[in-house]
Length: 393
Image 1 (cartoon, rainbow, N blue to C red):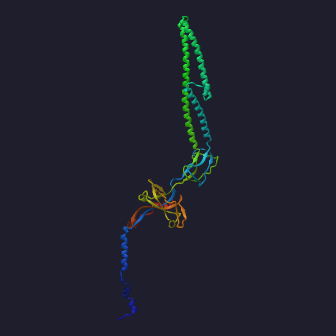
Image 2 (spheres, rainbow, N blue to C red):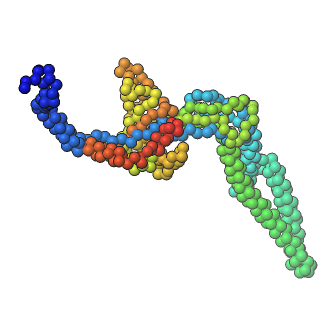
Image 3 (cartoon, helix red, strand yellow):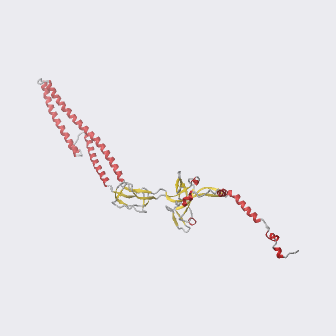
């Protein structure tokens, strides 16, 4: 029985004939490509990075500027965003009382020095000229000493005359030995009195000389301490930088010691500060390379900044309930640029995404890790992700 063409074209046999595979070339080629690709994965290497959010900061922390002592403001040269150099005078407090104390000590010291010079002259000079003494009191005192010596010399001269006469009388047998000895004794007493007067006076000078020398040392120590204290009435910029949060004090106003007058942000090299989770910190090493994707500059147009890790914290910190380690890295560029030459500065406070190079791995290792992640659904957000969500930067 012969069927019409229309019926034959709609039979299962006709359908199978039309759709049968005439060649396996495409399937074989696709299979070869897949197998070759899988086989090549152990030999294809790629760089691996650990990424974290970060911020650009100065190499040194911002510092508070505080009033060194209590007093009244004499000069006040501070304003917000003011650039200062290390050693610049920022404010001065009234130091007139300290200055007066220093002047008083210096005046007293000069008097003591003049007195010491007189004492040295009195002790060591072979012949003393009263008019060469510098202090009037010393000239007066030495005059009194000379008068006592003259009085003793007169009494000794008179005693010697009497002694000579009594000695002749004693030799002639006119007077007794008792009377002669009495006159001799009185003459010896006068000689001893003169020697004692001179000895006591020299002892007084030498004792006063030691005392005055000690006074000079004390004056110098006091003056040095006051001059050092005088420097505390000036507030100098400890470092070069920019002033922030300047308080509105007025000249002649009162200020207490330790009161914060401003903050200074140092003008130092910029660094990048990030926080790395404990699960990644073991992979981070000093000197490792880093790339920075600056949030303010689209990296597709501006490119990436770069640097190296310079510091890894040894202690764990907890930020936003997440345990992290602080990592600091250098910043090799001070600006980024577009192809047309337009420049964008890298400033303090700019946020970024840092990528730290940790190793080089094959595609096979990465594929294996990916499969491991699929088979371990317990893998969840890392602390770095939590930090980003919580708005750390």
